[in-house]
Length: 183
Ligand SMILES: [Zn+2]
Image (cartoon, rainbow, N blue to C red; front, side, top):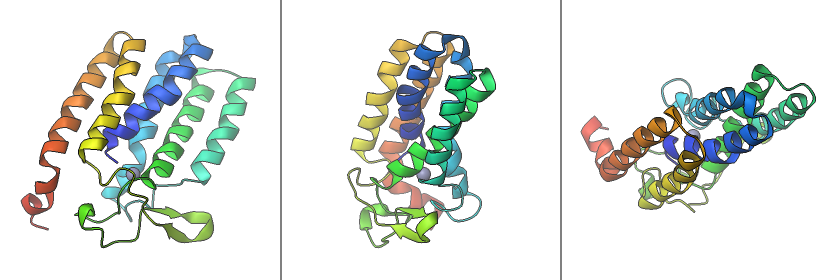
């Protein structure tokens, strides 16, 4: 799935509930949700994509523990750590439901969706979203982002608007990306 879908999902599913529970830490929750939603895909550039920074089990479990800590001792830092880890875990788990890790995922030649570190093996892609940048992927970005933009006021709406523009552009040109890059 596109990084905008992960960021939007984290915003709606994690930052919104966090800001309802602890409204004084809304800013921390929003920033942590966006960063946690984006961070795993940094392994596109360093290490092995969908493995080096994707931790479906470890990040999710650490996120639950951090959420318990945040409930017991709420602060900007504890809320941010919990939301960041849960967002990173959610990102890694949801990549399982997308396409494979290859450059042209619509060709479906790779059986690798995301790496399951405790089992030391790859999960096979479920193709609920056929590939990153597929039309249904853009739809998911919008479905997650728009309610979040309605909920939050101020700069979050600008971030959401920018994210939607990026997602729409990526969706339109996704299939040309490997050719343009010459790979
Ligand atoms: Zn990813």
